[in-house]
Image (tube, rainbow, N blue to C red; front, side):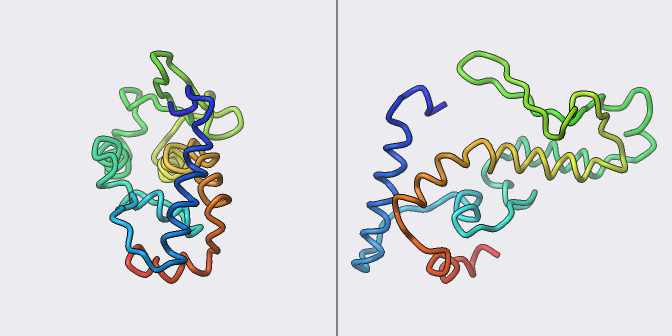
Length: 154
């Protein structure tokens, strides 16, 4: 909910410039980037295992969805999920469709992997893409340079 502050994108720009300046001058910065954020910086896809230490509750929920018995999952007493993401932002409930007409597409044992992937993409990439892009744009760090640092993250 950083968008409450009209200057929030300026903060990402400033941070990107500070990090870029430190890298240019070979100054070690005592900053540990979240795995998901770093993967976005390097242009890589964020998967289930990548969110394990960031959001343990979401990780466990997604893992249970994927491991649930197909017959139980598809039964009438199943989870009743659709291709939407529900979040609370500043006390208001927001629903975002993960696919076109996602609210009318039931998640079943055949499409649950797609659902989990789209949910992770929305939560950890799409919803913060503006901030990540501002950080990258301001830092002027090329993807080639970032890939040199990404070997530990793949």
